[in-house]
Image 1 (cartoon, rainbow, N blue to C red):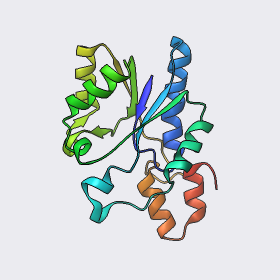
Image 2: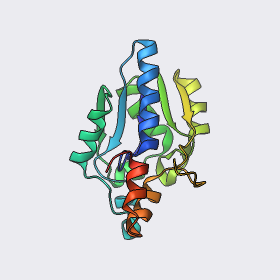
Image 3: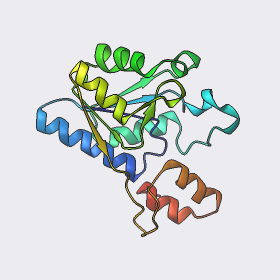
Image 4: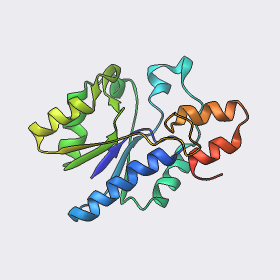
Length: 173
């Protein structure tokens, strides 16, 4: 059972996805893994507007380890990766390298060249290659504001000086 993403900040929404991966893995007697990247994809595809990161690689891996996930697979993200079509990524990483049985991602998940791949596409290809796709709804902010928790919203809160709101969404100081 795997999930894929940048996982910057490892906020409550990320933690919810990882908890789902761990739960499915435990039910099926399988291993759980997070597939992430050595740098945020935006650093390559749009460096002029790439976000300031909430966590560096070392912090992110420490936070991932604390979730109880069995493995973190860190892929290099470079120009080649950025230009890879979604199907090539699926075949190379999910099918041939990881022999994936199930992928759990947020229902807003996009991947591959120009973000061409999405949950619907992943599910369609999964039927061909024999893996399931479990989309997870985005986690709403616990303070009642009608906005899902996201790394972008946390960055915005920090930029506005609202450290308390950022901590609530992160689930930690």
